[in-house]
Length: 341
Image 1: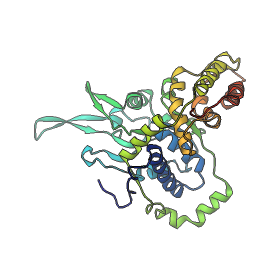
Image 2: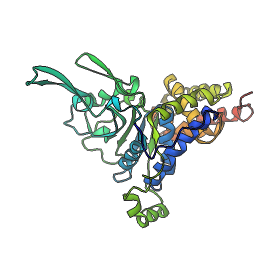
Image 3: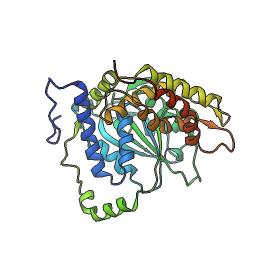
Image 4: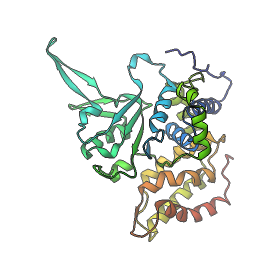
């Protein structure tokens, strides 16, 4: 599907990595224009998108999470219109929600005397799962298969989701009444857990002064990206951004430190180390490098590992434990060569 705001593809002589950087910059410009004062969060969401992960936002009401998800959906244009998949969907999770409200259900049509499948909101490129901890574990688990395998099984029939499928889930850190905390298996499906705070005074004032322009869609005139371009950018990050053996050794050393730490009852899993590799590559891509550096590891470690730790009582925060366990691996990285030979 053509779009007047979709930038033309780069010339054939341009490298795969240059094309991926162009895709990332276009998404970044649109999201930063739509969501004021959240540049760091915007960048982390883009990293998760390129790393093919999912994001859990722990935030306050009215902090811009819906605006962020909608802006991301608006930044995408579907170049495969026949798939009938919408750009963005939002699910408001409530205690009375049913799994079929998420995945879709089979309906009987009395006119044709046949059953037909009505897709649920999960069939989207970007899914906003709002207040995910307000629904029952049974409904929460309806997302597990979709997030892990990009497919969903309804009435014993497995249906594939789109390759781009990306979940932004939110939960309120303050209001605990009527909530169902996410189990470890559900948390492990999220690449990042990002705790959002209120934006700065300067950013809040800037938002109010430019409110008309922001509400009118100040970023709508900026170039969009196609679904295929995002998928290709993911491939480029995985194949063209170099991960030195020393980085992988540092990840294993970090995992060992968390497992031996007296402050942690359960250290990070092997799955989290596997998920960390494409995240590091995506962050390096966003930073304009073709290799993963120690800065990438130090920046992403709290977002990837903190929500996977089980802490001993009185051990402080998970972020503090990760920072402590990261010291020695980072010291070893300082003496290693990380660029491609």
